[in-house]
Structures are given as C-alpha cells and as structure tokens.
Length: 284
Image (cartoon, rainbow, N blue to C red; front, side):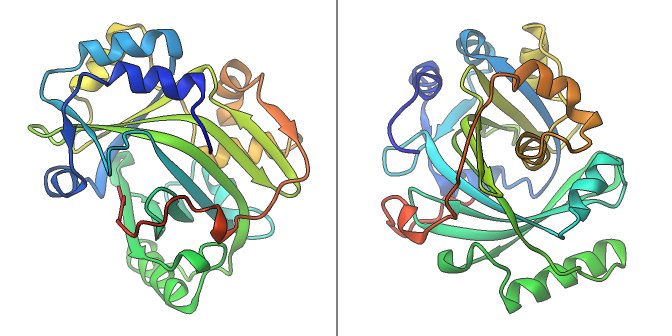
C-alpha cells in the first residue's frame, strides 16, 4: 500500500476539482449503517466521465489532506468457510465478520455485516484495538453473539482469521441526499500462503443509499454500466482457492479478475504495517 499506482492517480485526478468534506460531516449527514448497496466495476478510462456526471452537491472525504486512504480488512470464518458458503448459496440470513484497519490513522473497527430485509445491508461496528485485529477478542465475540442472536436468533460460531484484503479508497458524499460512493483500487488479497492482486484497470465503485436507486446509479447506468455481483471477501476466497465453487461470481471473476496476479508466500498483517498512526478515526 505504499506509493501511488496508475489507478490511484486516475481516481485522484478525477476528483481533484471536488470540494473537501470532513469525516465529522460525513458521519453527521451520511452515516448509512443501514442502506442499499450496488457495486460497479468502472474502467479506469471511464472514471473521469463518471465524476463529471455527478451532481454538484458531491464532495470528497479528506483527512489530513489525504483523499485516497489505505484500508486493511481481516475476514473471519469457520474452517469450512461457513460465511462464504452462505453467500455462495444466496442465503437470506447471511453475514460477514471482519476487522477494518484505517492505515493512515492507525484506528480499527470490528464489524458485523448482516443482510436485512429487501436486500438491505446492516452494519454493526465496535471500536477495536489495532493489535487485536487478527483475532476476535472476548468483547468482540460477545458483540458478535449479540448481533446474530438479535438479527437471526442464531448462536455465534467460533471464527478465525482466514484472509486479509488491502486497497486504497476514495469516498464521495452527496451531503444533500445522503448518498455515498466508495471508489476502491489496488486490491491485494492474502491468505493461506498466497497473494492475489487485482483492480489495477478498474475502479470498484459502490453506491450506498438509504433508498434503492439514486443519482449516482443513474450516472453509472448512463455510461452503460450495470451492477455486478461480488463482495471483496468472496472474490478473495475465489482468487486464493482456484478450485472452490464460485458460481455467483464466475462471470465477474472471468471478466474483471482474469489477469489478477498471484504469488506466495503471504505475510500475516503486522501492527507495524500501519501507516502514520496519527490516532484519528477514518471509520466509514
């Protein structure tokens, strides 16, 4: 996550003219812990067009003069990948469990993402020690148990870290309508002694809205782009385990990740990999 890739530079250049918005403003006006999500894979050469078609009510999140922020997520699952299989099978009661570290601020969150009614995404979060991010501590286990009991009436399984994803994110926010766009590039997936790298020629754009469709979706569709079926965790599992069943994401993987490079071995996340450790929350 050091340096700037071509993809990062394209995104930065495309949003350079947008005004800055602070994290406090984003949380106040666009918290969106319950929302409707749509994902799009935008070719790098079309991203500037997308930015130009957004309403002039959009701004870009800026923290300590940084607009492209480094993220690291550690995903937890059972040995037989229960949460992956739930997504593979399209289960209505499905969830993901992860820690998310904000590498430029040195902060971390423990997160449980649940699928609600009408395909709504519900995200529950707990401030988390950075040093604990590769395992679930007792407080997080109790938090997870409470979320699953309340949402699904299920006990919490015993989970362990299965893989890590890292990427660079730029966040655009419509402060009038509460819509948010996250724009991710330079995805690196690591686990089981393997590393896979993708999103070098596309930007993963995710619209996050309190309603089903908004101006951002209209702008994306006007470019001929349609939502894709994917999650970073499921794509990472598929990339790192080539023989695993991956039917829902097969077309996405073939079209957008066929050139993903792989190498080994991978290294486990290390607290020293955190960036500037300035202690300011980038938690969105």
